[in-house]
Length: 192
Length: 305
Image 1 (tube, rainbow over the protein chains, first blue to last red):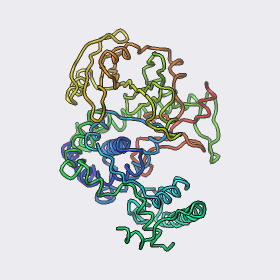
Image 2: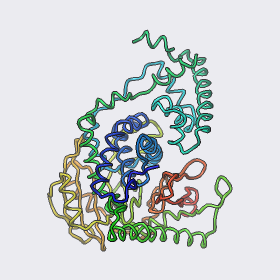
Image 3: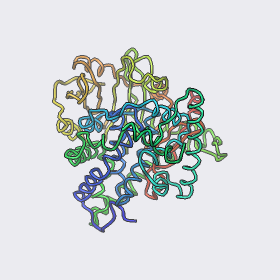
Image 4: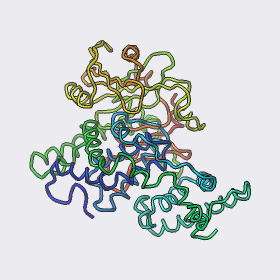
């Protein structure tokens, strides 16, 4: 595996900065989307992105090159989020840089059917929910999820299967309780 | 529901599409600029955090820097944390973790914080400590809030953002005073006044933060051989100076008693309390990781009170 800071014998600071720029250009959007989907708002998401890239800079030698860098960043962001959700820490100055850019909240209003899925997701454990979101929202394959979570691909596949089963069960219970069910693929197509 | 319906329903519940994020001013034209701005902030923020270029540069001088940093500076800091753990273990013993392994306990993370943090509190009515961190080697912060409840409590009850809540942060920094002042000015902060804080002369700057109606204010001064920086959002500078004037040096024990119990971050590691113990918040795959298992159990902090 080639690392951001060790591909060649000599990496100047200027080169490292260029690579950081590239890392941000390649993955900033995906990381921001990841953070927005899991944060209470753009400011929190900007906070998470800033802190994740801070870690990336400080650990530049550990960041994989190519597409794997995104999975590494997701893994860091996941931990940063966990930290934030406990402590609500703000790195005001870093975040202000991103706040300038992320002034609008791109969240889409949820429909009733989406709400059923959201409620079902909230009823799951954190590990089930995260693996489902990595697959369903980030569009990752089990092998890629494995890199984010630091587990084997087999384990990721197995956990994803179990999480799907639990989500289905929650959805069934929600539907039984109040008649709300997610739209089928056909209904969604028709709605568009 | 078919497998396909299930996948579609899950995807449809995604509150933020990638396209929506691409549509932000973050990108595409601002993306590169955003990265540079962020990096500028990071390098200004973390002078002791290590610059990758310097760390891997092959020249002898650069290698010397590398070795000083990797095998001199950080391990010394780490050694301090390890010594704190060892002292705590000798003094009070160990406790058993959720999996049955003995874990360092007794709020040793707090001991580390107490060693390195300036024992200063915002001694004004209604102000309390929300967090205390050692973010980098020789750097950290104490964050204060004013209000009836902590943000964590409000969020837990689904009332995040409700009510009036004020915050302030006292940071201790490794950069020279002149460098910090230069960085504040480079960030767009303008000098507005000078005040005496804890017996020293502090320079006060203000700036207009994006997305806020209030004023951002910063005071920077030297205190007992290091640079302190106090930040807060205020309606006006007079309020900031009043807030600044409420900073008081206290005994280490008093400072420790004022700390919250949720999260502890030290140079040795970051620990977050969980229902079933604590979790290290750091990538665990790398052999080069700076983080080490940290030293915090909320129960033992309660006991130590």
